[in-house]
Amino acid sequence: MVRLIMSGKGEGKTKQLMELMSAAAETETGCMVCIEASHNISFSIRHQTRMIDAGEYQLNSFDTLRGFISGLYAGNYDITNIFIDNLGKIVKNPDVQDMETFLQWMDGFGEKNGIKFVATLSADPETATDVMRRYL
Image 1: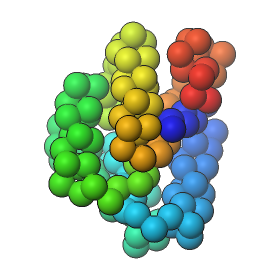
Image 2: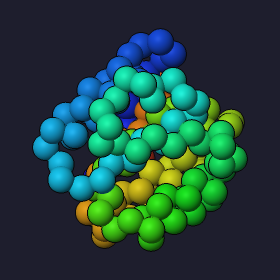
Image 3: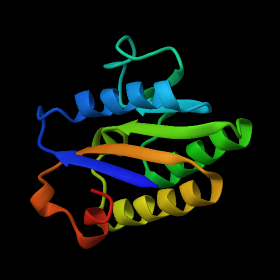
Image 4: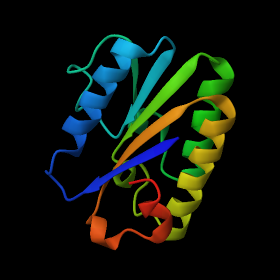
């Protein structure tokens, strides 16, 4: 399962993501991971969520991010939720086609391994492609 939260800058995407993380911490029994572009929210979440600063790992392409997520899961099969805050900042200048491919990969990977993904993207929802709309 993939959920994409898409809206303009400063419109509450990170707050919504934090609320979803908090709700998941109350109901999920597995491990949770949040990949963020910088340490913006690390002090505002519950201890059950492992915070990862993407800048420390140079996750600047969807291929690198896909490999990183695969490696996280290979090292911990108990991961049930992965939250990604601001895909556009993590993957600088993302190509729309690459974004669609990544969303579809997350959907398949999540379904196969029982992982729920939530990602945020700073962009006008009106610009979302058909593939992106499936996950809004």
